[in-house]
Length: 113
Image (cartoon, rainbow, N blue to C red):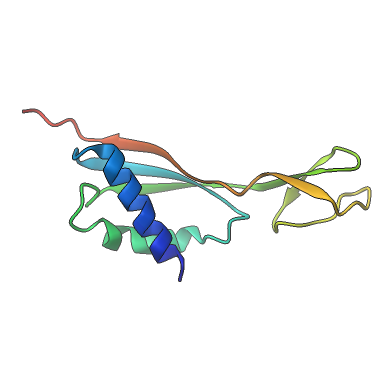
């Protein structure tokens, strides 16, 4: 399951950007064409967060649908796989959406000193 390694990297990057402040929520954008399973990321998240500033943080995942643009007619078509066929018959599609893996937002606790 490659999602474990991906989740470990997400947690490490988020912890680095948090600069030691406790994180309450992490929002990810995951494209449907990435071959990354959001449910597997959710499954791994709590375990990967243990002992870090993200421990106890909530994970929100926004799934971004696949979208391609036909190289022949310019039409945008929804994609469930990283390939497809346009209504005009063309198979040359440029993927314009759905390959994202992005930490969209970190919500951190205010710590009073």
